[in-house]
Image (cartoon, rainbow over all chains, first blue to last red; front, side, top):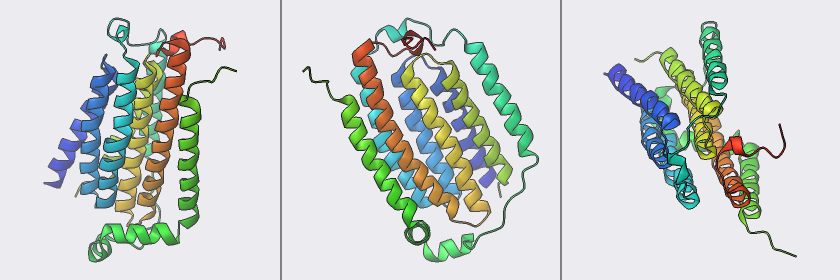
Length: 169
Length: 100
């Protein structure tokens, strides 16, 4: 049963990824992306990561994707539907990506898993995923957490500076 | 029980599709969507490692990746808007001022 659920999610994720990078209309790509994020959230649920599944829905599907859709509709790309989708040197890019795939698949065969941690599935079930994640985040990873808040602040200021109109002096 | 390898292969395939989209598409918005695809592929492998190694650090890392992806999307889309205002195009092969 778990295998069937995984195979369904994996098949849908791969098909949607191909659709996203090949569709002519950017709005279609963004909407397929929405469907993809829901399926990735489902994949997180099969891996006992409920908190991340919720974050995936809220941050990715709720915030980032709306931002993308907003920009796509703002730019009003009418001529997009008539010109070619790919750059002139697309065979070069595609062969580079396929070479990367070959390299990754070959290197995966020599993969050795690292040492096991403290949080088994039973320990997580006893205390809930969000509680354990919060405890690890706010004790062991407090400094990275603070740095991420600075990164988000820089992103806000940078987005305002970049997108505002230049004042003519 | 689904083996760890399946998740890693899925992650590799999605990453490669994203990389291929980034390297071949002409529209800069689709290129940004491809970057998000690659970040999500990395997240899949991190969460699966976290689950199979009984460790929480993978999920903490995914939390940070999602935060950085949100920052990256905000900055990147601001750059696209600034670019569109100056050049009135979203095609990367028409942006050739630097003759790279």
